[in-house]
Length: 413
Image 1 (cartoon, rainbow, N blue to C red):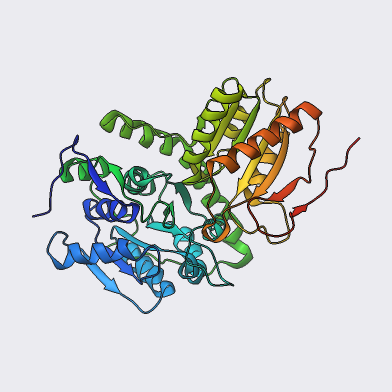
Image 2 (cartoon, rainbow, N blue to C red):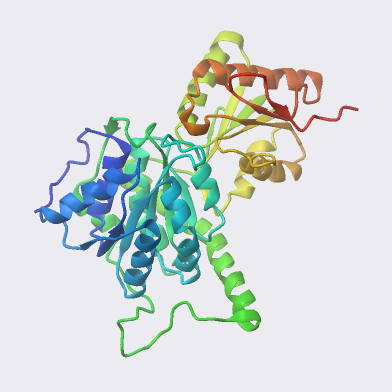
C-alpha cells in the first residue's frame, strides 16, 4: 500500500522528488517517459513507485521525448489520466506533439524542469524551454520552490480535467536550483491529495465504442479557424477555473496561490518582474533595500504564464507611486527584447501610470543571480525614475563577463 503522509508533517524533498510524489498521489493511468537531465528523477522515481506496487498505472519507457508525448496523447485519447516530465532538448523534440495534445483537448500534465537549450550544450537551468512552449496552447504554471513543485501538479490535474477546460497543463520548475535543492515540503496524505484531484472523468475517449470519435482530424480552411478560436476561448476561460482551484487548495491546506504573485507593491516606486526560483532572491533583495536605503521596491511574479494574466499584471503596474519597472528574462532573446519584457510592456501600455520599463537578460545556462546583483539592478531603476527616462540602453545583460552588453538605445527627448 502506498505510503501516507500527515498533513502537518514536514518532509525534506527536492523539487523532482516533490513532483514525483504528486504524480504518484494522482493515481495516473499512464506515464510514458524518456529521461533527460535535470528532470530524470521525476520519471525515475515514478518508475520505482510502479515497480514496487505503490501505483497501479502503466509506466511506458519509449525511445525519445517525441515518442513520450505521443504515447501520452494516445493514452489520454483512450480515456486515461496521463502525465510525464522533460527538459530542454527533450522538450524541443516534444514541441511538434505539444500542439497535438492541446488541439485534441487532452488534459495531460507535463512537469518541465527548465534548462538551457543548445548550442553550446548546457545542462543547467534557464527559461529557454519554458519560452519555447509558451504558445503551444497549454496552460503554463510556474513553481518557485520545492513546495510549489509538489502543490502545482496536484492542482494541474484538477484544472486541466475540469469539464469546462479540458486542456493540457505544464508545471515548470527551475533546473537544479529547484529540482535538486532540498527544502521543507508539507505534503498531503495520499487520500486527501487524491480526493482533492478527484476521480478522472473521460470525455470523448476512443475506447467508448458506443460513441465513436475521431481525434486529430484534418480540417483545412473550412473549420481550422473555428477550432483554434474555440481552443483559445477555452484557454482564456480557464482563468476563473484556475482561481477556483487555487481557492479550494487554500481552503484545504492554508497555502495561497495567485495567477500573479506580488510582494510589497502597495507603495512601490520601482518594481522587478521575474519568474521561477529567482523570485525568492528578488524578494529578499527588495526587503533588504527597503531596510538599508528606504527605496520602495516591489516584486511582480506571474505564476500563470498561460493564459497570460494581462489584466492582473496591468493592475499591479497601474499604481501612481510606480515610476520604473525592470523585466528579467532568463532566456536568450534571439535578436529581440525579452519575451517577458514584451508581455509586461503590453500590459503597462494601457495603464494611466505608464511606468518606465527596461529589460535585463540574466542567468543564462545557470549563471547565478545573486542578491547583490538584484539590488544593483533595483537601484538602477531608481536612477531611471529620478531622471524621468531610461538612463541606460533599454536592454542589458546582467553578470556577463567581458565588455558590458547593452542594446536598443533609448531615444531621449
